[in-house]
Length: 298
Image 1 (spheres, rainbow, N blue to C red):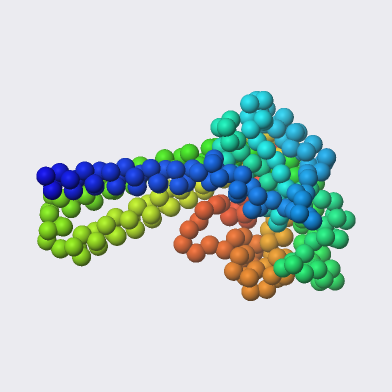
Image 2: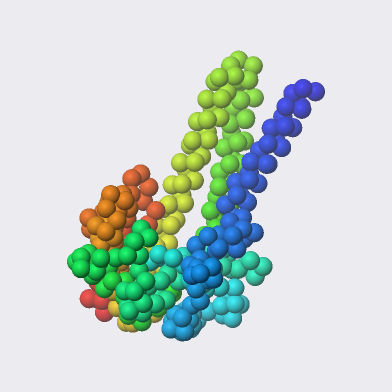
C-alpha cells in the first residue's frame, strides 16, 4: 500500500511538473500578455505614447508585402516601446493575440530623437562623436523600417512560445519518468537519500541544459530562415536589411562607448551582442554579411 501510494504521488508530481513546464512558458504570452505589454510600453506624463501615422503606415505596408490574411493582421497589436529594439510577444491565437513593439527611433523623427533622447536618464552630449553616430544610426530609411517590422512579424508567425513550452514539458515528462524508474528499480530511496537527491539534481541540470540548447538552436536557425524569407520579398527588403544591420552595429558600438562599463558588458567592440555560453541569435555582423552577399548575387 505504501509502495502504491508512493508511486501514485510520483505520478501526480510528474504530471504537475510537466504542466508547470508547459504553462510556465506559455502564460506570459497569453494570460499575462497585457501585463508584459504594460512593462515595456513607453509612457509620457502617465499616458502611453501613440504610434505615429508614419509608423502605422510602415506596419500596414509590411503586412501587405508579407501578404498577411485579415485573421493574422487583426491579432497583431502594435504599440510603442522604449529603447531602440523592436519587441514581440504572444501568439496568433485569437483570444490573446500578439503584440508588436515599435521603438522610439521607428516612431520619431530625427529632430524628435535629438530633443528627447536620454542615456541613463541624462541628456545626451551631442558634441561627442559617439552621440552623433548614435543619432545617425537610429535614423532609418522607410525600407529599413519596413524590413525591421516585417522581420518581427515573421517571428510572431513562427509561434515560438508553443514550441518552447511543448519541448520543455516533453523534456520534464521524459526525464522525470527515467529518473523515477531508476530510483525504484535500484531502490535508491531505501539505500541512500543523498544519492537519490544527487540523481534528481543531475537530471534537472541535464534537462535545463538540454532545453536551453534546443531553444537556442531553434532561435538561431529561425534567424537565418527569416532573413532568407525577407530577401525573397525583393530588392527593397535586401537594401533595407543591409541598412538595418549596418546601422544596428554602428548604434551598438556607439552605445558601448556612451554607456561606459555597462555598454562593454552588453556589446562587443564590433557591435555584436556579448555572449558567454549561449549563442541565441546569429551575430549581427554575420546577418549583415548575408545581405551584402545576397545583394551581390542579385
